[in-house]
Length: 315
Image (tube, rainbow, N blue to C red):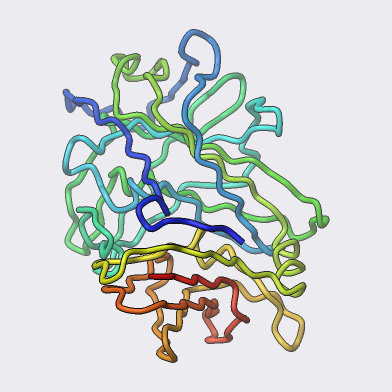
């Protein structure tokens, strides 16, 4: 069980925003090479997420800040570089494990902030040679926010924010893969349009891919995230947050099929509310009494998991 006081439950890491200048577009069919800055991987802050995927299924991996900020505001025209590594950090080929994919932005996508335009943002990542392997990348020279007549945006930061990972049909229980996305708002090293050098990187997203059966086994063994939180009486605007997205929770149906969470359902004082898919912040409001929040997952077919998290807030 974890214990928190309200003022330090969650911390948000913000990237330092750099000034972007220039808008020269790269030629269609351009070949790219990205060199490591100073010939070594940069040591930068790292955010690690463990992602559980059933065998033979796909899953979107994304950078949250860019998914909801498309780069029409220039400070989000970041350098974005997706690649795979071994466990020791050695860069390896993508080997068709993931690919660029469209991102659809609806009104609900922006409930927690962001200014991405609603509609479909085409998968904007380009292939590059990277440290004797390959990567998928995007940067400010590739930006094209021109909306087509059917609400499609050709090449935006939102379109570079996401890749679709494909889990092999046959995997063992201990399957593990590592997908990395390095980002930066800076443009040093990006002066040339073909042979690029990484700019000063500011954050690394590390996705550790595992067999969904691992989390299924945990949930079947009475898995429960339990939090004890101290809060002042009559505190306003109180919220709690699940540690990961609903799609990271898996359980078995009565027939034995693995179900994947599509959204969270939380219950406070007997009243249940569904969050929108891929939302994990639960707004409680004003605290007048001790409050218990219980959370379960709902699959796309409306099947419901057992309780996976419990927040006990004491005033």
